[in-house]
Image (cartoon, rainbow, N blue to C red; front, side, top):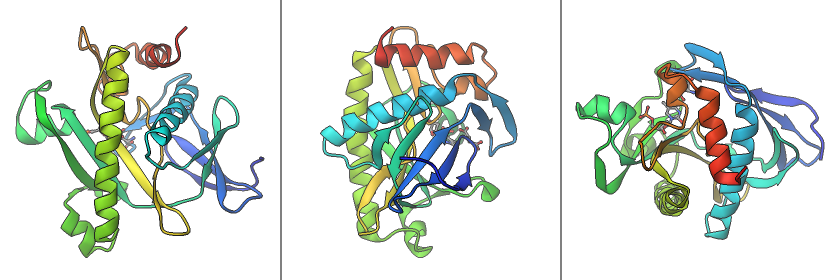
Length: 236
Ligand code: TMP
Ligand code: ASP
């Protein structure tokens, strides 16, 4: 399948139309942004890591009964996915305190929760992706009650599958962000990406950060962290 016109350019990906109107091609860039795009940079090789890792994880999830947008990897940076209407919610699951959770509630990073948490943000950079609860999402008609229930169940299932998967690779899945989309028949599928851009990964032994926090917080060795996660997933 080949790209026709560019439909959209986001911060980390471009999306192209294809001759099949039910499919699009996503192309992963090395561009990195943080803090609503105010911090910008390049992480060499990131697009390849995120494309390959996201596709691999989505295939694992499909086997475990989580429907996703994934269709076919075309090359290192490009993948065919089902065309969806994105539900404008960022769905965040947390297993361990970090990032905005630690800041908002005034606690240290690294508290292991007995039960994972879920939260939603309204996907809107101008408003800085404000935190929202499900009643807010319903009031703004971003999703129906049934869709929100489906999204929550799928997000917790993704967490159970991926937490166990990464632990076997010596990685703690601290937290992550998911996005969901609607197919033309209304079915909800997991969309966007699952990668070191959208997850916090800590080495299980040392708690070394192996994700985009190295870029967000200027910790150095950013490319090495992406490469290391690639190595854990795919081997040498
Ligand atoms: P947070 O602690 O900053 O709220 O981030 C929670 C998780 O969501 C973390 O794994 C990083 C991911 N994330 C995104 O994928 N996109 C974003 O824009 C932000 C702020 C976080
Ligand atoms: N990519 C997001 C942005 O630029 C933020 C992040 O991942 O921290 O807003």
